Length: 81
Image (cartoon, rainbow, N blue to C red; front, side):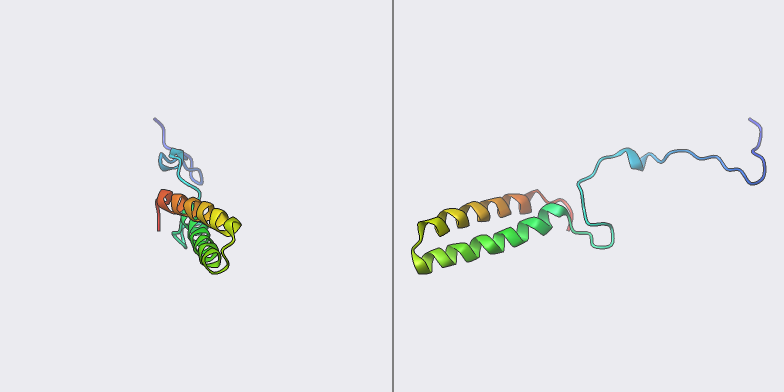
C-alpha cells in the first residue's frame, strides 16, 4: 500500500456510530428522555390523586392513576441518569 499524499488522510467510519441508543437531550445533561418525561408525569399523577382525595371526584382518581402508572413505567425504562 502506498503512502497517502501530504494533505490527505484516510477516513474510516467509526464502529461506535453504528450502535443504536435511546434518544437523549445530549451528552452534557446525561438525562434520558423516558426519565425526563416520566418524572413530571409521576408528580402530576400524585397531584391528581391528592386532588381526588380532597374533592372525591372519580375523574381525578382515574386520570391520576393512569398518569402515575404511565410516569412510573416511563421512569422505569430510562437507562441513563
